[in-house]
Image (cartoon, one colour):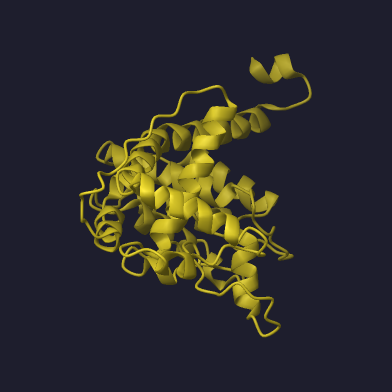
Length: 270
């Protein structure tokens, strides 16, 4: 009926578009609450004095090509590079809310609190409720059609845990999202429809204890996307500051010897 109403699309096109739309809704719904929790947790680890110093440091390095998070973190007694970068992203999050006419309330830490944020970073990273999907991997249009068609035809066992269904949907949205990513240049598809169907079937059988990152990594591996030379893995909870998704520990200089790897990371995540 919808295809007939649209007129310019057939039944398959409409169904694929609907699947993609509902996958995006799934990711938004499952991550909105977690994003809010993560943002509030960041506020609680900063004092007003910390914030003032942070704003001064951002102003100091504003003329740099990118913010040197390791250097900025060293100006604090108890902050990690990941912690200061997270604070910067929280400020951007607040600005976006304000620009949309929403009220922002920050619940900041007391000046008397002595918790070391470097320990808190690790604690929150092990909390799967705060996991954030971030991967440089993306698909061509043909590959998107293959994975979405395979998903459309997949038989979901009644025993599949609901959290795994949400993780699979979010993982597929993560690799089909082209925002701030370099589009693939491969001439042939990295996987077949049969391989996509097998990958989805295997993930549907995943244990409920699998984390979102494990599910995402399984999907990327099963679809032969780790062979892509531009592949960057999902963030490793045990090595946050060394991850491309986190801070890149470089100083603020126009150094001609800066590695191409670091330059690529900066282009992806700044």
